[in-house]
View (cartoon, protein in one colour):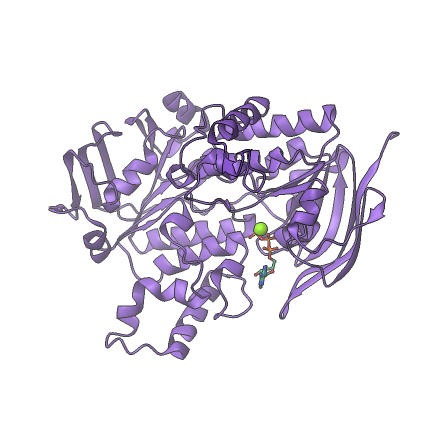
Length: 497
Ligand SMILES: Nc1ncnc2c1ncn2[C@@H]1O[C@H](COP(=O)(O)OP(=O)(O)OP(=O)(O)O)[C@@H](O)[C@H]1O
Ligand SMILES: [Mg+2]
């Protein structure tokens, strides 16, 4: 094709973290207007690679030619000043500031020395108008009051506010509702065509990457295992390159042995929920599905005792009504929740890998509270191995792990102990295909031990593939209960729209 104008060439990029060879001799080049996909399993080196391009991480070796001259960034502001900006996998916002202030942090609009809040908000609103990926976003709300998906939108707007020539997006749609994802992808296409902006797009959602990217590079164990051009991109090919084996779409077999009811919710009413009735039986995976905001998360949190605006209704375990639905009593009775936003509810960034796995179980491991680090590490290592978690050493900080491996740590923690009922909210967000399959198998194994599972997922394929029974929801109400051959995408869509 003519008119190809190179903008970035990386040659033999290499990066180690201790013994981990995170990025191994990776070369590729980008032309203006490319939407360059970057895929690979958790821990493959995607985030590390883009951090080197964005000046957040210094390569051990390698050369970068940007706009025809060699670039050696020492810090992220070097890259930003040269119009390369990154939307991170985890929002890195200042929680005490509002959205507008976060967007314009370090480039504040001031009146003398004082930040001009009015002007900042006005500019932020204009930016949102220009890039309307989530038009309802309230920009003068403190970001710690925002939902995870809204925080992502703030991150994206912040990156766009630099008017970058290369915008790097690290799993931007992992937590976005479908509508916003679509708007974002459309925006990328539009900006690449009209303004020749260049994008590097990391995603575990292959379908989206295939739709939007004109080439895709696959990383495996830090190495570039191939770059496919638009006309050669196929999902199966990509998956095979990612995991180095043939892959057939695979969910474990559905339950053949459904037993008695373990957990029953009767006539539950809260601010957001209307007359909810749900049963989770032994051996059963129950799916909850609806459009974003239809109430699935609220059900999960209410059962676990996090929502305390419970107005009416009862929750029974093995036929016995619970008097108090509180987190501590639910945990004691063996009802566990794997929450949606792992940073808000789960992960302790400043703890080690081992500490994050054992934190909920210290009393059982060390009933006398004489904590032995070596014993804790040994137990954590065993548990981490069960979940195939990739880390350098068990004593390293969890924030150093790749996003997907962090997600698996939460699973490893809660599946450490026997549970009766496990509630999961989007447990496979940001997790690669191999690890997803491992998680589905783990869930199935639990039901074979007569446990009950309630799973909220925003992926319709996943909910169809994994559930023995599905409750569909619309605006706080349950609209249908589907079982066996009733479980089809068509039936689900009919009941949620
Ligand atoms: N700061 C760090 N210190 C130590 N090890 C690190 C650090 N950052 C990344 N690693 C390791 O480097 C490897 C690559 O990690 P990276 O975050 O680049 O993976 P990724 O492809 O982005 O994965 P994911 O899809 O899970 O986000 C992993 O083994 C990770 O544990
Ligand atoms: Mg990553």
